[in-house]
Length: 246
Image (cartoon, rainbow, N blue to C red; front, side):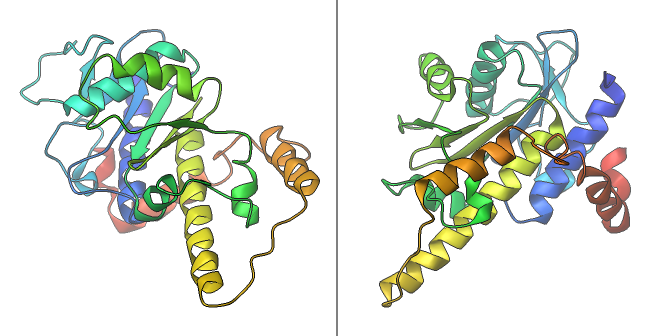
C-alpha cells in the first residue's frame, strides 16, 4: 500500500504531467487521491497552475468538504462536488482525474461520442459512462447522478464539459486520460478529413469488441494500466523540473 508521503509525490507528478501534455485549464480542473485507510482525499489548492503543484501543497478534505488539516487554502467548489461524489460512490477509486482538454471536450459535444476509429479508442468502447451537462457542477444534488452515470466504469464523458477518469492507482487514472485525449485527437483529425471528402473506415463491431476486451481484461503481457509507463514519466519530470517532489 502506498503511504501518504509517496501518494503526495505521485499526485503532484500527475498534475505536472497533465500540464506537460497540455491537458490543463489554467487554475481549473482537479485531480484527487484518497488517503489509504481513510475517507479523506487530497486535492489541489484553488489558484495554483498545475505546473506549480508540489507534494506538500495539497488540501486534505473529507467527503463533506471539511478541511481535515488546517490550511489557508480553499478548494474549488466544483472540484469538491465532483470528486466527493466519485470517492463516496466508488470505494475502489483511489484517484479521480477531471480535465477540460480541448479534444476530449470536443468529443463530449458530439452525439456519437468517441468512435472506434483508432486503437487508442478501442479500450474505451463499452467502457465509459455519460453524464449530461447540468451547468457548473456546484450543486450537491448532482453528485448522485454523477455516481449513477459512471457506474462501474473508469471513464465518464461529461457532455459539453470534458472527461473524468478514475483509477485504483494514480498511474491508472492518468494513463486513461492520456489515451482518451489521443483517441479524441485522432477522431477529430479523421472527421475533419472526412468533411473534405475522405471516407472513414470503422472496424467490424466484433473486432472493436475483441480489442476492447484485450485492453480491459489485461490479457497477455499487458500490465496494470499505467504501471509500465509511470517510471518513464517520473524520469521525464525529474529532468524537466523535480520540484514536484517538494
